[in-house]
Length: 442
Image (cartoon, rainbow, N blue to C red; front, side, top):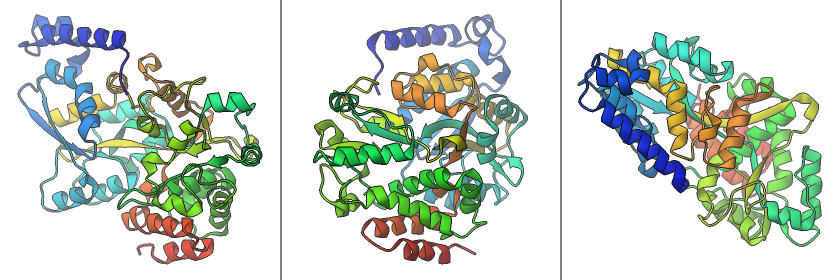
């Protein structure tokens, strides 16, 4: 996501001014007071280094580093960051070998829990814990908590309960955004009757192929069985192939395995398995498909010349509930910062990452939102980011974290992905879910 010219210049000017104010100052000097007063709580650690590792890399890593640039300048703490594609697989090996970083950013609560149970991940420090209590909901705190102890603070978030569509296409054909699941299916039937496929999808993602269907199932189970059943399923307190889960996946099949509905722009149902997830929704812009269920981060995959807006080429609506009276569930995901070291400078960085100031700076870089309740929504650069932030901080929304990210890796990043790939290729619902259940680690 690219800033408009004027906001980018304004942000750069502010950064340059602050860098000038802070450059060469010590923690107690007048320059620090003039330009870095907001960082007073983190002073006293100049000249130290904190190592941070995560799966965030390339352009997104550049944005992440920019978000703590001023913190580094004003405190004198150097944040040594690196991101890698194999972070999730490598971190447990590094921890076992005693080579863990000072801080790690966990995209899965399941991985955070596994590291906490090694005894090497530290409980959140006092400042971090206070910030989480103050600025985040109880749900978000829960996903960073293991066995009653807070280990990870949320640092960014995304919403998965979105359906992407073309407002221009809808307006031209008199289609309204559906408010219930029944309305969603009625709209799908109406579009299909015109000869246009109402849905397009893609689940190919290299070694992670199949994960988009796990999101479909999780979102649908939340809507049909409710958050308590969802929690029990994720925690394996009910079987993976519980009848309510079977019913939810069959409901998904009413869309994704319906030849009348899919796969616009690509072919039949079978083409879903070989279509890259990044390309899954692109036929919307050619009017060969009308809708694509995918997370807020899918905004990064639309062409640069596509206008993302309520009246633009592309936008998204909230995946409607089955029963509106049962509330508004939202499926999402995010990243949590956890510390392997208890040094004061590490605790200072950790505490800062849980503040509204960091959330605002992170949002200013574009393409990222936060569940921080005091996020300044005016700094968000796109309508989708604003819509996501509104849902994430809405007290009337029931938020649940991506289920596969909370499950043991052998399931959540293994048999669940492969099982859903087999299912989209035509395997029987009950057979696939039972196979995943029998493979759940003891």
